[in-house]
Length: 279
Ligand code: SAM
Image (cartoon, rainbow, N blue to C red):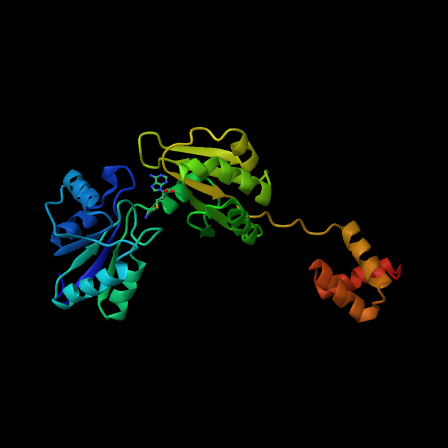
């Protein structure tokens, strides 16, 4: 380990214990202190994955800032600290951001030790586009706020990824189907890496109709908004006539048509001429 202390942000399994990495095991065995959400759960996990007793300190949403100061003091003594969550990657919908920030601000090194994360595991197996995605955490609990949150991203082209509590799944699918449209492709990824892992693929409407088992841990993925189809020749002709009827002439008509339809100025010019019967 280095001379000055480092904070290692260490991912742990989200269900299947075989997913602990060799590097995570080594780091967890070597550090002087482990910051975790719940000391009892982490002690149990360490037992199962073969990490001998380590000094543990609980860091959660309510004490994170105060604990961050203490951990920075430990790093300044040249000791190494690991941060783990109950499951998955720390800071991803879990505590840790304030601690990482405090360690960065204090000038100490942060090492990210990658591993399981439900967002990425769900995306990798869902069969929806992964070139661009947006992770949005848990949707708001109140129905109206949830609807509004969905409306804000309804036009987004990228795959949307949500964590969902199982008891909220059916309501969430229903609101999503109303806001995004029932035909949007969607996947319910449940109990990932565990015995009853399931990818339920369909559309929002088909998942509302048959949500399947609504127990366990759930990631909901919704395909991005479809690209709008380009306007047809008839659409363009109608739009050009409307521009002319609105009093636009010559180059201004072409510019206005391009603005309204998204086609190039050159093409708009040709369409305007054709609509006037000049070509
Ligand atoms: N930090 C974790 C990670 O890296 O994925 C996420 C913690 S967040 C508090 C817990 C939520 O993650 C669950 O409610 C569920 O939506 C999702 N999740 C965690 N493990 C999962 C699993 N095995 N299968 C499906 N979803 C899971």
